[in-house]
Length: 330
Ligand code: ADP
Ligand code: MG
Image 1 (tube, helix red, strand yellow):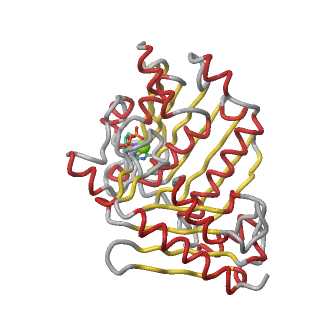
Image 2 (cartoon, rainbow, N blue to C red):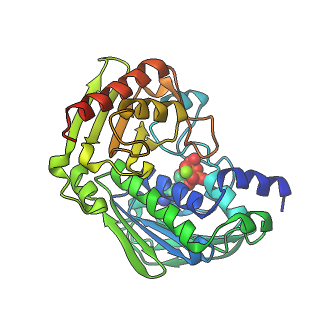
């Protein structure tokens, strides 16, 4: 097996949470309504993501382990009209070079009248198929990842204690739960359910589930648009909710949770001087721009993006946050 492949995999998969992120995005792209995540041993022993999405047809199951296999884009032009979270066809191929991966899936078309094909599974280790079989299950996909980094000792040494890795996963799932309130998320860590949220489609309900606060009265709904190039909508929590924690600040660009320095600075600019230093308000903002005005192809994990109208949008973000917090009682 190619060393270059393992190095490439390391760029996308830095640590256990990177695997979970890729698998959740695939489940969302597959139109899942329910996503269950399981972690054991900080993710090194096992990570499993089960969805009720469209599934993968049996004859494509092996191909998705190959690099650049994606069902999501067909031409270069599609890159500028991206409506899915994935598009490079790299995640599963990468994970399969640095872990044992079992893919169990049943495509939605195999259900119903007459057709009663069972789900198929294929286990890959070191990039090679080692076992395969059939099993009954409803449509959807279950991906199980075992022994992450077993052949990349340098990465393994870099992975922190289970508690740290589990913590990252909890934060990640909170973000997606907030970003996709219509999807039910369930997280089990070492056999204990630690998070259950979403499914109703109501973001305020999700926030209450996640933060256990009587949030409704403390949230201001916002919606701002220049009428043409962008829409920003979401919630800004009032000052009572301002915590000493950046974890409560979530920004999505076209459905993707991002970490973009300039946009984060713009948000912070909005509450600078209004809150005690080091405190952050609860901010959940969704920025929607035309797909050809955002470049998501600048970072392997796609958490950074570039915007064509960055300055305009930054000013708008600052203004949105400031106007709510200025009105909010201290
Ligand atoms: P990408 O998401 O960039 O297309 P991935 O390596 O993450 O690449 O996935 C490869 C392909 O496998 C996807 O394009 C999709 O066709 C299929 N796939 C992966 N996970 C799922 C899933 N949970 N449900 C349905 N199809 C999936
Ligand atoms: Mg993907």
